[in-house]
Image 1 (cartoon, rainbow, N blue to C red):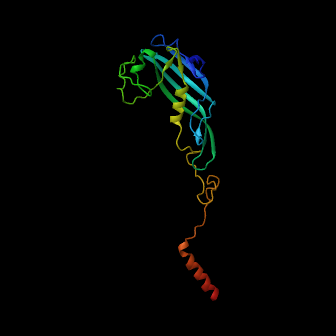
Image 2: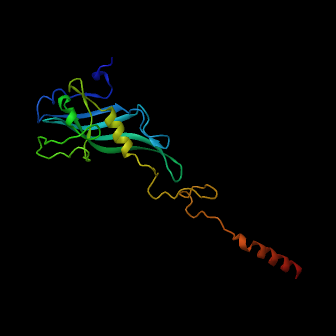
Length: 206
Protein backbone atom coordinates (compact mmCIF):
# COMPACT_ATOMS: atom_id res chain seq x y z
CA UNK A 1 0.00 0.00 0.00
CA UNK A 2 1.54 3.37 -1.01
CA UNK A 3 2.44 5.73 1.80
CA UNK A 4 1.21 9.37 1.69
CA UNK A 5 4.75 10.68 2.01
CA UNK A 6 5.75 8.81 -1.15
CA UNK A 7 3.41 10.88 -3.31
CA UNK A 8 5.13 13.30 -5.69
CA UNK A 9 2.70 15.99 -4.51
CA UNK A 10 2.94 15.39 -0.74
CA UNK A 11 4.03 18.24 1.54
CA UNK A 12 4.86 17.60 5.19
CA UNK A 13 2.74 19.86 7.42
CA UNK A 14 3.03 18.07 10.77
CA UNK A 15 5.13 20.88 12.23
CA UNK A 16 2.48 23.54 11.57
CA UNK A 17 -0.55 21.41 12.42
CA UNK A 18 0.41 21.20 16.10
CA UNK A 19 -1.31 24.43 17.12
CA UNK A 20 -3.04 27.47 15.66
CA UNK A 21 -0.92 30.38 14.52
CA UNK A 22 1.85 28.36 12.89
CA UNK A 23 2.92 28.99 9.30
CA UNK A 24 4.98 27.18 6.69
CA UNK A 25 6.06 28.64 3.36
CA UNK A 26 6.44 26.54 0.25
CA UNK A 27 8.40 27.18 -2.94
CA UNK A 28 8.62 23.97 -4.94
CA UNK A 29 8.16 22.39 -8.35
CA UNK A 30 5.72 19.50 -8.79
CA UNK A 31 4.94 17.36 -11.86
CA UNK A 32 1.66 18.24 -13.52
CA UNK A 33 -1.01 15.63 -12.79
CA UNK A 34 -2.84 13.96 -15.65
CA UNK A 35 -6.15 15.27 -16.88
CA UNK A 36 -5.43 19.00 -17.13
CA UNK A 37 -7.17 20.18 -20.29
CA UNK A 38 -7.36 18.54 -23.71
CA UNK A 39 -5.83 18.80 -27.18
CA UNK A 40 -7.05 22.37 -27.64
CA UNK A 41 -5.60 23.67 -24.37
CA UNK A 42 -3.97 22.00 -21.40
CA UNK A 43 -0.85 21.16 -19.43
CA UNK A 44 1.21 18.13 -20.38
CA UNK A 45 1.33 15.44 -17.73
CA UNK A 46 4.65 15.62 -15.89
CA UNK A 47 5.40 19.24 -16.87
CA UNK A 48 6.98 21.40 -14.17
CA UNK A 49 4.37 23.24 -12.09
CA UNK A 50 5.84 25.90 -9.80
CA UNK A 51 3.93 26.40 -6.56
CA UNK A 52 4.68 29.15 -4.05
CA UNK A 53 2.61 29.98 -1.00
CA UNK A 54 2.08 29.19 2.65
CA UNK A 55 0.19 26.89 5.01
CA UNK A 56 -1.31 28.75 7.96
CA UNK A 57 -2.79 26.78 10.85
CA UNK A 58 -6.11 27.68 12.45
CA UNK A 59 -8.12 25.85 15.09
CA UNK A 60 -9.73 23.30 12.78
CA UNK A 61 -7.23 22.95 9.93
CA UNK A 62 -4.77 24.56 7.56
CA UNK A 63 -5.39 27.39 5.14
CA UNK A 64 -3.19 27.11 2.05
CA UNK A 65 -2.72 30.24 -0.04
CA UNK A 66 -0.78 29.60 -3.23
CA UNK A 67 0.39 30.98 -6.55
CA UNK A 68 0.56 28.28 -9.25
CA UNK A 69 2.47 28.65 -12.50
CA UNK A 70 2.41 26.04 -15.27
CA UNK A 71 3.41 25.81 -18.96
CA UNK A 72 0.25 25.66 -21.05
CA UNK A 73 -0.01 24.37 -24.61
CA UNK A 74 -2.94 25.58 -26.69
CA UNK A 75 -4.24 26.23 -30.17
CA UNK A 76 -5.65 29.62 -31.04
CA UNK A 77 -9.35 29.18 -31.73
CA UNK A 78 -9.27 31.90 -34.43
CA UNK A 79 -6.09 31.35 -36.45
CA UNK A 80 -5.23 27.81 -35.25
CA UNK A 81 -1.62 28.73 -34.44
CA UNK A 82 0.01 26.77 -31.60
CA UNK A 83 0.40 28.69 -28.34
CA UNK A 84 2.97 27.93 -25.64
CA UNK A 85 3.06 30.16 -22.59
CA UNK A 86 3.20 30.06 -18.82
CA UNK A 87 -0.14 30.34 -17.06
CA UNK A 88 -0.41 31.68 -13.53
CA UNK A 89 -3.33 31.44 -11.11
CA UNK A 90 -3.88 32.07 -7.42
CA UNK A 91 -5.61 29.55 -5.17
CA UNK A 92 -6.86 29.29 -1.60
CA UNK A 93 -7.69 25.91 -0.08
CA UNK A 94 -8.68 24.52 3.30
CA UNK A 95 -7.17 21.31 4.70
CA UNK A 96 -9.25 20.32 7.75
CA UNK A 97 -7.75 18.20 10.51
CA UNK A 98 -8.97 14.58 10.29
CA UNK A 99 -11.13 14.88 13.42
CA UNK A 100 -12.95 17.86 11.91
CA UNK A 101 -13.53 16.54 8.38
CA UNK A 102 -17.26 15.96 8.79
CA UNK A 103 -17.99 19.61 9.47
CA UNK A 104 -16.15 21.23 6.58
CA UNK A 105 -17.28 22.66 3.30
CA UNK A 106 -15.88 23.71 -0.04
CA UNK A 107 -15.39 21.19 -2.77
CA UNK A 108 -15.51 18.15 -0.50
CA UNK A 109 -17.70 19.02 2.48
CA UNK A 110 -19.37 21.83 4.42
CA UNK A 111 -18.33 24.30 7.10
CA UNK A 112 -20.86 25.85 9.48
CA UNK A 113 -18.86 26.91 12.54
CA UNK A 114 -16.70 29.87 13.59
CA UNK A 115 -12.99 29.66 12.89
CA UNK A 116 -10.09 31.25 14.76
CA UNK A 117 -10.13 34.30 12.51
CA UNK A 118 -13.43 35.35 14.05
CA UNK A 119 -15.32 34.98 10.77
CA UNK A 120 -18.64 33.18 10.48
CA UNK A 121 -18.29 30.38 7.95
CA UNK A 122 -20.75 29.86 5.15
CA UNK A 123 -23.73 27.63 5.95
CA UNK A 124 -23.62 24.16 4.43
CA UNK A 125 -24.82 24.19 0.83
CA UNK A 126 -23.70 27.77 0.12
CA UNK A 127 -20.60 28.68 -1.83
CA UNK A 128 -17.39 29.89 -0.20
CA UNK A 129 -14.09 30.98 -1.65
CA UNK A 130 -12.03 28.12 -0.26
CA UNK A 131 -11.90 24.62 -1.74
CA UNK A 132 -11.42 21.82 0.76
CA UNK A 133 -9.03 18.86 0.56
CA UNK A 134 -8.17 16.15 3.11
CA UNK A 135 -4.97 15.87 5.10
CA UNK A 136 -3.27 12.48 5.02
CA UNK A 137 -1.54 10.23 7.55
CA UNK A 138 -3.39 11.63 10.56
CA UNK A 139 -2.79 15.22 9.48
CA UNK A 140 0.91 14.93 8.72
CA UNK A 141 0.80 15.51 4.96
CA UNK A 142 -1.07 17.68 2.49
CA UNK A 143 -1.25 16.20 -1.01
CA UNK A 144 -1.43 18.93 -3.67
CA UNK A 145 -2.23 16.73 -6.68
CA UNK A 146 -5.99 17.36 -6.73
CA UNK A 147 -5.53 21.04 -5.82
CA UNK A 148 -3.14 21.64 -8.73
CA UNK A 149 -5.39 19.81 -11.19
CA UNK A 150 -8.62 21.47 -10.06
CA UNK A 151 -7.13 24.98 -9.96
CA UNK A 152 -5.56 24.82 -13.42
CA UNK A 153 -8.55 23.13 -15.08
CA UNK A 154 -10.90 25.83 -13.79
CA UNK A 155 -8.53 28.64 -14.83
CA UNK A 156 -7.91 27.58 -18.45
CA UNK A 157 -9.88 29.68 -20.97
CA UNK A 158 -12.48 27.89 -23.07
CA UNK A 159 -11.41 29.74 -26.22
CA UNK A 160 -7.65 30.46 -26.12
CA UNK A 161 -6.33 33.21 -28.37
CA UNK A 162 -2.77 33.87 -29.54
CA UNK A 163 -3.50 37.56 -28.87
CA UNK A 164 -6.65 39.42 -27.86
CA UNK A 165 -7.08 41.07 -31.27
CA UNK A 166 -6.34 37.98 -33.40
CA UNK A 167 -7.99 38.46 -36.81
CA UNK A 168 -8.32 34.74 -37.51
CA UNK A 169 -8.41 33.09 -40.94
CA UNK A 170 -10.12 34.08 -44.18
CA UNK A 171 -13.39 32.19 -44.38
CA UNK A 172 -12.97 31.74 -48.14
CA UNK A 173 -9.37 30.65 -48.59
CA UNK A 174 -7.97 30.13 -45.08
CA UNK A 175 -5.31 32.86 -45.33
CA UNK A 176 -3.98 34.21 -42.03
CA UNK A 177 -5.46 37.69 -41.69
CA UNK A 178 -2.89 38.60 -39.03
CA UNK A 179 -0.17 38.43 -41.68
CA UNK A 180 -2.23 40.24 -44.31
CA UNK A 181 -4.87 42.46 -42.68
CA UNK A 182 -5.86 43.93 -46.09
CA UNK A 183 -6.57 40.51 -47.57
CA UNK A 184 -9.97 40.31 -49.26
CA UNK A 185 -11.85 38.72 -52.15
CA UNK A 186 -13.88 40.55 -54.79
CA UNK A 187 -17.43 39.36 -54.38
CA UNK A 188 -19.58 39.05 -57.49
CA UNK A 189 -23.32 39.20 -56.95
CA UNK A 190 -24.60 36.16 -58.86
CA UNK A 191 -28.02 37.79 -59.18
CA UNK A 192 -26.58 40.08 -61.86
CA UNK A 193 -24.50 37.43 -63.63
CA UNK A 194 -27.16 36.83 -66.32
CA UNK A 195 -27.49 40.56 -66.95
CA UNK A 196 -23.72 40.87 -67.31
CA UNK A 197 -23.73 38.05 -69.84
CA UNK A 198 -26.53 39.69 -71.81
CA UNK A 199 -24.67 43.00 -71.78
CA UNK A 200 -21.54 41.31 -73.09
CA UNK A 201 -23.56 39.63 -75.84
CA UNK A 202 -25.15 42.90 -76.94
CA UNK A 203 -21.83 44.69 -76.96
CA UNK A 204 -20.36 41.95 -79.11
CA UNK A 205 -23.14 42.43 -81.73
CA UNK A 206 -22.52 46.17 -82.12
